[in-house]
Image 1: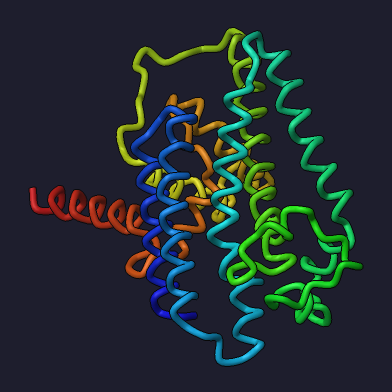
Image 2 (image 1 turned 135 degrees about the vertical axis):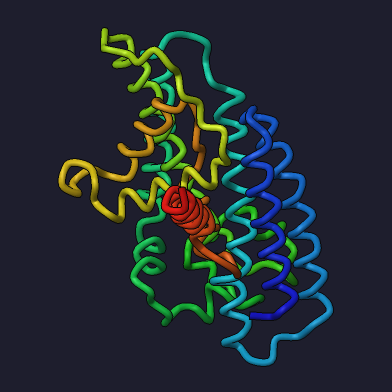
Length: 281
């Protein structure tokens, strides 16, 4: 990967992570995210305009793997913004129906793009020279109308479709999380024994996400059969916090250049220090 592109992507991910942690209002969060993504894509375009791809393989890699990492984020936040702006007022039943209808729209996209979806997901490459090289479009490959108005120096016939696939994965997770939250609200009304003290999570969402994946990886709940989303829902309810898109946060943790388990390492150090202090008394 071009070092400038790598740095640009890393910076974008850091900015989005900061927005996710600092902004609670979902609509405002999307507005802020879209602003920084558009600026990042503009910089990406400048980088490409000032350099030439050395080989066809390098050009294909950029439009198949790299550019979609930027544009998929734009699609994701724009779609979440639209979903939340159109969210109806009403009870949990109405909201469930609304979010389920949005999931059906994602399925419709999958059904309409099944052939290309299978091509991309199975790692095929035999049509890459048509899909991901500029000026090599094939009218027989079901092109979207917008392609004919796109900047052909920065677009191919199918790089946007890849971005849509990546974005839809994240949108599906978002919608499923919203449904889980609603379901949790329904069940939380049931009478249950509650402790006298209410514990609030005052650490960062990133730290709790790190703990979430550690608990899931260790299989400490229900003999390891509990799914990650169920553990996330339990932690969100218990600590009265919304983790948001914890899957994307986990991806950010994996991309850390320093310690990928910063919070867990800090927990270990703190406990050992406490034990040492107790031994000295």
